[in-house]
Structure formats: C-alpha cells, structure tokens
Image (cartoon, rainbow over all chains, first blue to last red; front, side, top):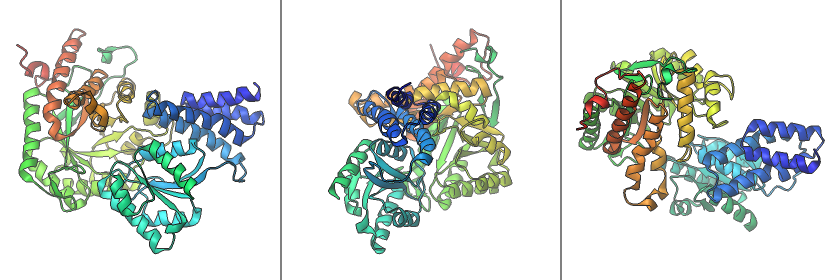
Length: 215
Length: 313
C-alpha cells in the first residue's frame, strides 16, 4: 500500500465505526513510517468529519457518531505517544465535562467527538465533575474554552456556580464558557453569564469555532 | 426465533421471581413486566424534590391506574421510584409500598440516594420486592459492598457499554471478556446479587434496532431476563410532533412492541402517566406472540397472561 492508500484505509476504518479496524490500519501506517499528525488529519479525522456530515444530513445516526468517535479514540490512543507536542494545527483547546450530580455523558461525548473532528484539542473531565475540579483544571490546562454540560434541571445551578467561582478567583477573563445540555435554555445561558450556548452537539461545535475566532 | 428456548444454540432461559413477579423465559411463556416511573426529575406532582413533598392524590391515582391495568391485562407491573435526595427517597418508598404489592425499583442518578433507599427498604422489610436500579460499568466497589452488606438480591444491570455499542459486543462485555470489567460479574461477585434484569440500553429511535439485537443476544447466549426502556427514546424525540398530534402516543408503545418481538422480558416504559397508552398495546402483543409460540410447543406458564385475560370476542 502506498501513502495515499494507507490514509484512505485510516479514513475507511473510522467510517466502519469499528475500533479494531482503526487499530489495524493505524498499526500498519505506523509500521510504514507515516507521520502521525498526517494520519490523524488526512485519515482518521477526515473519516470522523464524514460521519459527522452524514449525521448532520440525517444519513448516519447517533450510534454511528458515538462509535466513529470511539474508533477514532482507539487510533489516537495508539498515536498519541508518537506525537511530540509541538502545537500542530490545533484550532484551540477545550476543557469540558458534565457538572456535579449529573451522570449523563452521551451528549457530552458527541460534542467531544465532533470537536476533535474539527481540530480542537479536547480535555474531557468526564461526568459528575465538582465545581472545584473545573476551576483547578482551568488553572492547570489554560483552555481557550470551558464547556459545561447539564442534562438535569437540578444540576443547572452547578454550571452557574462554576462561572461564579471563575469570577471569584479572577479566572473568568481567561476562558470562554460554553454551556449546553438538555436542561439548559438560551435564556438560562445568558442569565448565568456564559459566553455561548450550544443547542445541540453540532451547534456547540459551531459556537466553539465562533468563540475562537472572536478571541 | 419464536421457539428459541428449544432452538439450536439457545441456552436454557432463566426465570427469576422478583417480589412475586416472574420475569424471563421464552417468548410466550410469561407476559412482559411493565415498569412505570414516578417522582422523576421535573415530574409535576413533586413539590419539593429534596424533602420528598408531592401531591399524594395525584401520585395515588398514577400507581393505582397502573395496578388496575396490570390486573386487566395480566402484565405484571413494577414501580420505578426516582429520587434525587435521601429523605425524598425514603418518603417515596413509604408511600408506594403502602399503595401496592408490586416490586419497587430504587432509582437515582446519585449513588448515595440509591444506597439510602436500599437501606431504608431493608429497615422496613421490603427487600424481597426491592430492585436496585441500576448497576453499570461505572458502579464503585463501595456501592457494591454496601449492597452485599444489606443482602439485596435483585437488580437491574445496565449492559450499556459506551466503548462498543454494537450488539455483538454485549455478551463479551457482560461476560467480562472485553471492554473492561463486566457490570454483571461485578454485581454478582462483589454485590452478591442473584436475580438480575439486563437492561441493554437505548440511545435514540434508530438505536432501538441495536436494542432488539442485544436483547436477543443476551437471551440466546446468557439466558437472562433482558429488556430496555425504548419508549424513552420516543419521549426524547422532539420532532415526532411533526408526524401529527397523536404520533407520540402511538410510537410510545410501538417502540416497546419491537423489543417484545426480540424477546424482551420487561420494559421500563417511562412516566407512569403513559400506562394507559402502554399496557393495552404491550398486552395485545404478548397475546399474539404467545399464540404464535403455542404453535411451536411453548405455552404460557400462567393463566394470568394477556392471551387469557384480554377479551377477544
């Protein structure tokens, strides 16, 4: 296989939504000495973008999106040790998680997959993340954007609390805050002082891109 | 598929008695157990979700209506009690246990609330008909050891595996062969649970296709009672309204019927106010499937079955 065919194989492996397919294609490409960043950008991420586009057009579905994201993750897991940290063509760094008391992660995981597919570096703190952990992570990772997800009305106040804590600690100006999740409305987002509101996963990515442009 | 218990490659089907309700078996042996939810997040009858203050009469009507429909159709019912604070959980359990003999599911997204409910159920002598809802890949050892200490035997096991959603992954996941620690093995080995209901999970409407295949695989290869809450996907389906004002009401039970065809033994059908939309359709499908199974030598194990209960003339 030449370089082009290998990149095509990486792309097709993500489209297959099978982590094992991706692992096989990545290992083969590593063996052939392909540049890891090229593998990600021209192979894996292209596949994930394609699934994202199909999803946007209603031709692929939620499970496809999640599984393509998982398949991509499997590839990244193998490639990350090979990538020297030199910045690369990263659009921006997003730190995100679901707020404390909320264990829902499906929506958040889609946002993570789509952000990665669109060239963002994503640090995913997972679910049920305490306020102080968000604040600490903002300090430590210095992200461009902080994403806060809440699916339950009872946990929306925790989104507000994170923003308040950032203000108290003088960190609020250092990061843009993007909120979303089933329980949040645009009005609530405005009222709690968020910089942007993502109606759904695709919208969240669009807003993240806009926030980066505005910086 | 229909005579699956005797089909080549199907393991014998387990039937568990949970607080007097038999769940499991081959298609046509037992009616689908229907589980309605009450006191969920944003449930209008809840006035104070921390203390557990609610409109008693409205709650009573919901539980009683579900019980009546269960009586009429023969489909056993259970009550999924959802709370977000320990005090509320205890009050809800008291209330529901007084009202019905049906099994109670203790449900919360917060582990401390589930444990508080479990300990309270043990204290007031309800363990036999208490079901823990639920244990998943993310359940901690601490939570499992608390369950073991209390001695509870019934639980819903969430077979949902975010690392691999395709149905062929579900049995290896439950066996602990792949994708990390098995929620089923941990529940049995660390939590001491014995009577398990496998909830294979649902993401959205199309994914109910995956749910169907996963139910079938769990039953065929593990022989355990399996099911899901497919109607939740219908409730999350905002655009269903574009199909007409009654579309949601029709699709709600429709989603469950498909999992019944795949062999589901139970369905968590969502807010209990939908009981009137769900019970008739599910009972009808159970009767149809049971009659079909009879042609293949499988008979209902009980006269309390929609095939005998529903008036067809």
